[in-house]
Structure formats: C-alpha cells, structure tokens
Image (cartoon, rainbow over all chains, first blue to last red; front, top):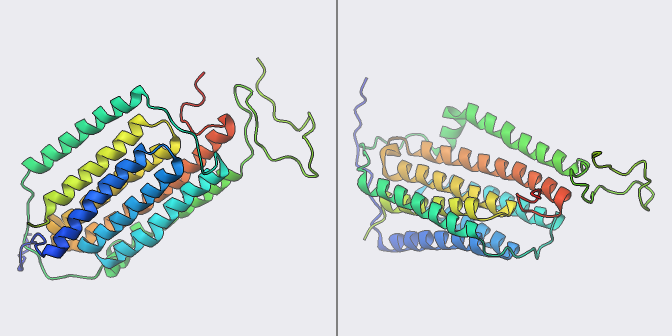
Length: 205
Length: 102
C-alpha cells in the first residue's frame, strides 16, 4: 500500500561556511587516509589513521545526528587507536621496520585506481531516486532502541565476543613454530631459563 | 556551490579505493587492517549520505543506525585481526602477513 508523504525534497547544503567546511573535511579525510597507508613509520601511520577517523566524525557532525558523531569520536576512534598502539607496544615497538617499495605497490595502485574509476562512474551516471520527506519522525536514540533493539543486542554480543576472543588469543601460550623458530612464551615461575622438558618443541622431521 | 549526495559519495569512493590499495599493496598486517577500516568507514559514509540527501531521507535516522552497526562491527573485526597479528608476530618476529613464506 503506497504511503503518501508530504513535505520537502531533501536539499543539498548551500550555506557557504558549511559547504566550505564539508569540502575541507572531505579533502583532508582522503589525504590523511592516503598518508596513513603510504607512511613507512608505523606510529605516524596510526596517527594519520586516527586523524582520518576524527575527520569522519566531523563529517558526521555536519550531515548526521549528533549521537553518531559522539560514538564515532569517543568509541570507534579511541578504541581503534588504542588497539593499534597496544599491538605495537606488545610486538615490534613504536618505531617499527621500514617496508621497502615493492612491485605490490604498483599493483595496489592499479587496483585502487580501477575501483575508484568504477565507483565514480557509477556515482556520476546514476540519478539517485529522491522521495518527499515525511515529518521528522522519531529521534535517533528512539530508532536505535525501538526499531533496532534486536540488532543492538546482537551488536553488544558481537563486540563483547570480539573483546573476549582477542584477550584470550593474546594471553594464549605460543605454539611452536613449524620452522622451529624462537618461541616467545613467558618463562616459568621462578625465573631462569626453561628446562628442556618444559621448552616448546618443533615438529619432528 | 553546494554540498550534496554526489560529493559525499565521491569522497566515500576515494576512501574505499585507499583502503583497497592498503589491502593489496602493503604486507604489514596492521596496515592491511587499517585498510579494511577505511573500507568500512567508506560504507558508513555512503549510508549516512543516502540517509541525509537521498532516498533514505524518508527515515533519516535509519542510515545513521546502520552506520553505528557497521562501525562497531569494524572495531570488532579490528580487535580480532590485531590479536591474530600478535600471534603472527610471536611466531615469526614479524608483522608481515607472508612471514611464514620460506
């Protein structure tokens, strides 16, 4: 049954300061994302990644509900950056190796350019359907807790499972390397080196 | 001069392409995971743009709700992926995803 909607067409943003802000945010967002994947120092790359997430939050502030901006800035950006820095502190340290330029960079650039051309072509040649807007409807919080309450519950379970699983993985003892590589298992209590019977062994050949 | 659906979608496409570049070109597990984050964010931006300017304007809050779900899923994927990267490092003393190659 068709629903008659009465209201105004969704209009593009025409306020000059807001338009300039959106253009600046979009340009900086793409530039910092590019810097994040091109920088060879891992700490700088993570910094550029965090800047990209903050700029996405700023974009949300201009075109989306405030709650989305707050969640993006306070939860997603903080958690992602903390996870990445935590991994670096546990593994290679904050000043990590320099990855040399390789043939994969050319292949990656070609793939990315092809994808970008395809997406821009689709965006440019499609006339997106636009409907009349109805009234404002329920707020964002009401939509989340009424229409999407099941999805929200599933999401909480997924995020909690991910946190639990990653914690267990990080705490798990190291399995012996197939090539007999050095193990990084914590030493047994009492310090000193592990006895031969407690040392992890590689597979027999 | 205005800011509409096509502008935001073009920026979203650019962010998606940057993520794809990171996935294909870089060998570090951390940078590949960052690339997937960019691709997730590009999808979220497209959802929000359609909710604000396009068909989704009938119920504008639904696009933002989907963006929240996608963002949280991206963070969960990052948590699991980084734990796997830590295990790779413990085994091979390297964060490169092909570190076990002879």
